[in-house]
Amino acid sequence: MTRAFKIFATVLFVIFVSIMIAISLLLYNTGSLRLSHESLIFLILGIVFEAIGFSVSKFSGHSIRVTSGLIVNILAASVFSTFEAAMIASASVLTVGLFIVRGKDIFKYMFNVSQVSLNTIFISFLFSLLKSSQVSKNVWLVLTISLTYMIINAFFFSLGFSLIAKATFTSSFAQTMRTPLLNSITVLPLASVAYVLYYFMGLMAVPLVLVILLALQLGNLFRSEYQQSKFENLKVLVKSLELKDSYTSGHSERAAQLSYIIAKNLGLSEKLCNRIKTACLLHDVGKIGVPDYILNKPEKLSDEEFKMIKTHSTKSEELLRTVNIFKNKEARWVRHHHERWDGLGYPDGLKGEEIPLPSRIIAAADIYEALTSARPYREAYDKEEAVKMIKEMAGTVLDPKIAEILVEIVTNGHFGA
Image (cartoon, rainbow, N blue to C red):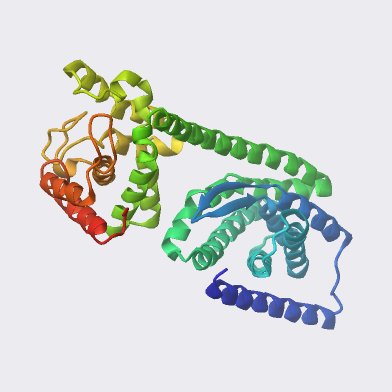
């Protein structure tokens, strides 16, 4: 845990406690400091809803978890006092953290409790300020405070996560927008539905909302798990290809790491660098459709055999398109990783900057790693020989700028021996 995050979490917690003390003193002086029976029931429901969560992605090695507690927090903010709503939000997060998630980092508890509670306090105040006597108008207000809640939550989460992972706020916010916030937005209208049902049915409405929410969250979970399993299957295919040939064992992993370093040196965002690394890891998965005798042939390939080898880039594209998160970008990058800067590559004969930048990066990493690895038909080149060949390929086979960066990385010892 970074020192910056600890300071941030502590400051946030002090602000939260100070506001809660101020509200408590104000209510005590007016004789209205109390928790109703309904708010206590809501607290139990808040714990149940907060416990319904699942990991939706990883970012910088940290798991991102989405929960359903926001529904209860938003509903509590619209039907109870600000004090009661804040107590429900803070107590449910703390209880789940201590007894279900069982994390050991006190600063994460302080951060989670503080940001959720401060968010609930703000939207509760906003609702009480703008609410109408007409339920039909309040429904739209509940939708508004729901959106407000999610935006504030995304801001706090991104800021906190950027301090933990030592990433930029922009990259953290982009990741938050891409997965956790999008998953949360799918249940956004449910807060308004819950408000209407509660108005007409009272507490009996909450179990119904819980059933609807469970259906939505299970759908999100199964979709996420299904796509992740497809990705894992592709990685297994790559590994099985390399295990069949000791010459290429580990090739994709090494090329992927080199592509990441090249992308970082080009100043690309962390998110894009990681996507390029993933695409490079899977760039040869299409070779699963090429006969082994061709892949392992020690002699020069015939024209027909080489034609078969050339199909692997389009086969890789087809396989990557089976994974939703890869079909618009990574699949296209993999398709073009054998294009040449001079236009003499395949499968589409693209030239120069017509070739996607990630494809050019993957091509450079792939070629260098292949040159420095032993093959059935030759021994591995040493670093000096490989660097010389990369320089000769600049402006013909490879993007000259990427070739220059690759040479710099290798000669400065930032990759390999």
